[in-house]
Length: 372
Ligand SMILES: Nc1ncnc2c1ncn2[C@@H]1O[C@H](COP(=O)(O)OP(=O)(O)OP(=O)(O)O)[C@@H](O)[C@H]1O
Ligand SMILES: [Mg+2]
Image (cartoon, rainbow, N blue to C red):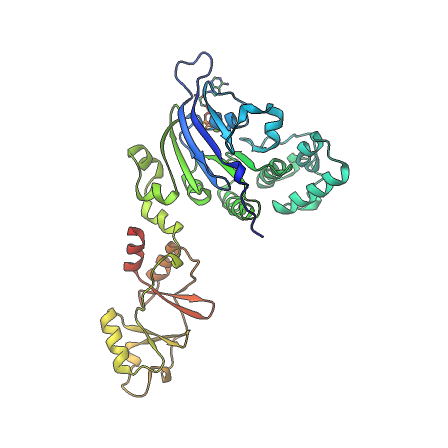
């Protein structure tokens, strides 16, 4: 089930500035930023550039020196901070579970404060444990008895307990190894499909930002916003050298992980119908500079025939074809397609939607896709 975003959950930063007492430089320069409802916006930038400060001004754990923040057009100062925070889940840097409370008690923190009855709290805890991929058996354990990744999930469950429309996540996957981190990122995206929160997530990791962000805000020291855009915008058109350096090497390869085969206009490529003659097949191979030809019957891809197997008689369909290989799905990333093309003897990847033939991907198509 895909949830709809709460339209009242867009977050607007309007010339928000924070200068801590005793500091000469602002931690956050005048910041203007619009976080659309139901999207994941990632704040990224060097240590000390004001990411946590920016996040904590949303739930008023820190008050701005100047400017204003609104959620759904309503200034966050219009309601008492405690009330405001009920609508804002917060996953803090280093997880921050209560060590002497069980997992169930940790998750139930806010519902208990809100005075929910026991049955309602129990049902909600069960629901959340399922939602974030934990097991019931863990509920009576203490945080120290869970792995780092499991603790992160508990942190997310706790933040979601009262079903807030807004979720602030400060380096939520900072403390786990790269493999668990990748899985948690994937789970966050799956979770977001179901709950459609407005999420502001802080990270140091540009690949994480590219994977989970609908938009990325690149901040520089002093909370200066260097660029704000979709991951592909940033990778294709970094605004300046700072952003370019932050994005790192292999920008084109990173863009290929974002784009899907279904985004391309696919070409016919070295493919013929089963009732084509060997002469016709040879013409197609010559045109496509290929020593292999793919054979399709109706909308099914039957396999590959090499040039040497063409003997001038009958139809292509009568020649025994090598089984379908070098296949990708419409949902495959262009990076996966590139990998398949590099390993394919025909230099193309065949797009198969289940059994259905959907055209072929070539290097030229991939390059054109990046230019689009
Ligand atoms: N309570 C405070 N009093 C004074 N200065 C502070 C306070 N909190 C943060 N700062 C300063 O404000 C700046 C921004 O800090 P902030 O915690 O927002 O950085 P960050 O981008 O989250 O860094 P990191 O990536 O290391 O978590 C830093 O220079 C920090 O020293
Ligand atoms: Mg921080």
